[in-house]
Image (cartoon, rainbow, N blue to C red):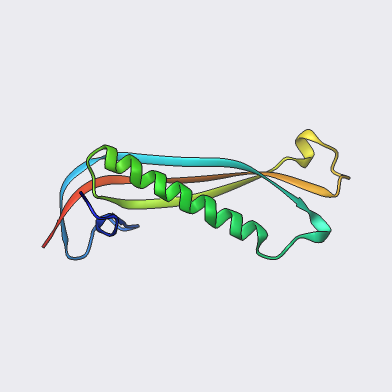
Length: 116
């Protein structure tokens, strides 16, 4: 059984000290969630904490998808977030509560590698 520490995620196309033996295909993951904030009472770090948790969840899912393809790594990983403010779309802008849809995306290429 493969140790979790043996699974690598890399933003580059190479893995130092490793040889990529097979490129298994693109893997993707995304999460979409709503975030409500009382504008005058915005707690510093509240959104950042939620966002980090979702980013970690997306990266765990990316690993899971790569493992299903037989991979032990993902190279060329990209992580992106998009924010869409809903106040002007679904509710009057005079409301003191801001609602945002936050989308977190990750993708990369699943690979099989061996140590050099």
